[in-house]
Length: 254
Image (cartoon, rainbow, N blue to C red):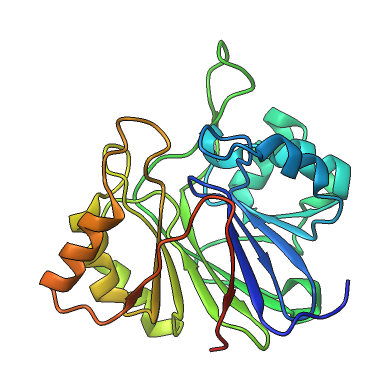
C-alpha cells in the first residue's frame, strides 16, 4: 500500500475504528464491524483484505466483535494486554503466533510494533473484561480493561478510552502522552455519559474530541449535543468532531 499524506480515521459505529498510518499500515480498534448501526458492516468485513494490527481494549463481545474472523483471514497481530491475549487464544482460538510478546504487554510499558510506525501504551479504564465462548458458557477472565494511547509516526497521538467511567487519574494520561485526538465513550448506562465524558476531556486536554459508544442500542442515551453543551459549560476549548458511521476523515499531524 502506498504511503498516505495523512493519518486516516474511519468510524464503524460503537467503539470500532480503522486507522491508516501515513506509512500505509492498517490498524483496527475494537472491530465490531457488524454492529447494529453500520449497515455496510458485512460488506466492509469482506473487503478488509489487509489488516496489520487489531487493538483491543477489553474482552466484551461488543468490542472483540469480528476480531477472530479478521485475524485468521488477514494474519493481523493482536495488540492487547497479556491477560486479554491469553483469554482470546484460550476461549476463542485466536492464532497464538499472532498474539505473542511483540504485541502484548501491560500497564506502564510501551509497545513499538510495525518497526516503530506506531507506539502503543495501555492506560487504565474502570469497567470489566471477560470473554465467553458462547451465550451458555461462563466468561473467561481477561484481565483489567484498558484504554489505548496510539502514537503514530508522522501523525497524531490518539487516545481511545475503551469503556470506562470517569475517574480523576485520567488527568495523568496526558502527563506521559501529548494527546491530539481523544475517542471518548459517552453513551451512559455501561460507560460514562456526556457529563463524565466532558470532565474527562477537560482533564486530558486533547485538540480534537470524537464521541463514541453511543446510539448503538436504545439504552445508550448520551448524545453528542449533550457532550457539546457540557464541554462548553466547562470552558473546554477542544474541537468536537462528530463522525458519521462509516465516515473517513484525515487527522492532522501532532
